Image (cartoon, rainbow, N blue to C red):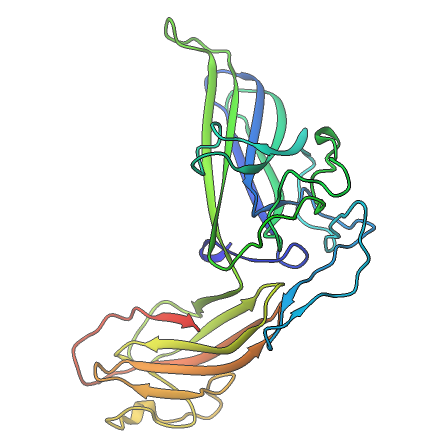
Length: 336
């Protein structure tokens, strides 16, 4: 999950969660049980793979702000169809169910609906490490305890990859989603008098649900005067929303200059002149040098449909001589 963000969408934006359980190197721990509590805005999708039925994707907010609902007949038992084979362990959960967990989670104040997933790891030898992975995604609507097709039993795994109870409020861009994993077992080694032999541990993971995300990377983080670096901006939209009037803005710090079809510097330094075969993709919409000798670079992407996955690349030159103080080569990027 780059930058702890997860695009909304249970069909096309699945992510892999990993739980790593490590036992003490000294003695065994018996009857080890892992409990993971996913908030209502996260859908537990187990090991993935395809099923025989597919859920409706709508509603999707379109460019005209109208709601589009794809034609689909109601299903008595709605199951998510997941794309292809995904990385997943042989270890499957012992039980999956939804419920109110006010005291055990310590994530959300008061009572809240969580998906409780339990794995029975049996006995763990000294120093043994066990890894559990599963798929999860942000659904269109949150889970509730009301089932349209009848409550599925927890021990069959039917409550996983099941949208029959996704009739809560819509998940939203910027929503913080935290889940808690706990592990407990009976430690067989010596303990101090009066100390319980039950060993426990816990860990949390938090992601932000997003409808528009961007990440920035560079081909080579080592800078030297006169060298050209290529930056990549990867942007994506969620399964449930269009992004209208989309503008990507990047700030190129003083000491670097963006290369393209023009020399964008105010001092006209020859090192920033256009170079054959070196330029942005797509073209800049605008480039402005700022008073501190940094540059504001814009790309107008207009309307991006749901499930857009695109990249912008552009080159910068590490200047040998430039006006102004030696500013940091720290860059920032944003979308609007």
